[in-house]
Length: 167
Ligand code: NI
Image (cartoon, rainbow, N blue to C red; front, side, top):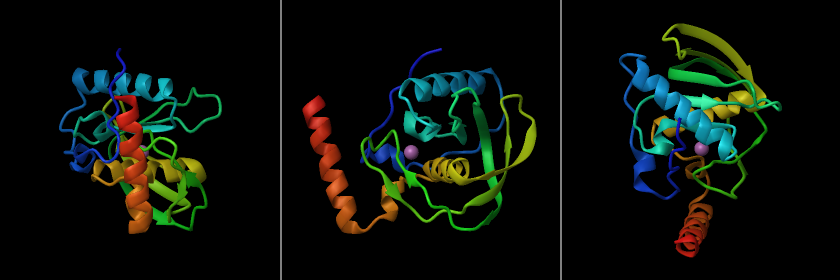
């Protein structure tokens, strides 16, 4: 396993649209293992392949307090979404920024797991928000892009400054 480099907003590669996985093979399982290691090390609650510059529909999430409930979603689809969630979101690609975004409170998702088998699950609260956030990444969308233009401009400037300082 190896840790992967996480793209930082406003990197243009975060806007690429991920392609569906055609076969859950060893290459995909190895990507999942590396993404999980990268997410746990960060530490973060979720990571989409887009964020490590791999443009395939793969997500890893662990929203548990115990950090031992790894969820892998390959080619995820939302079948139902209801209610209004109320949680602050952050993102490993936009460090230090936390904002509330309009998301569904309760969702039903269908995806493939690491074994390539299709499964359907329900999620609510933080886990539901996290799944919606990561699925947005696969569509090339970063959560701060839901905010006002003014806020986005400020966040972009802050991120660029951080990157200059760490360069
Ligand atoms: Ni994110």
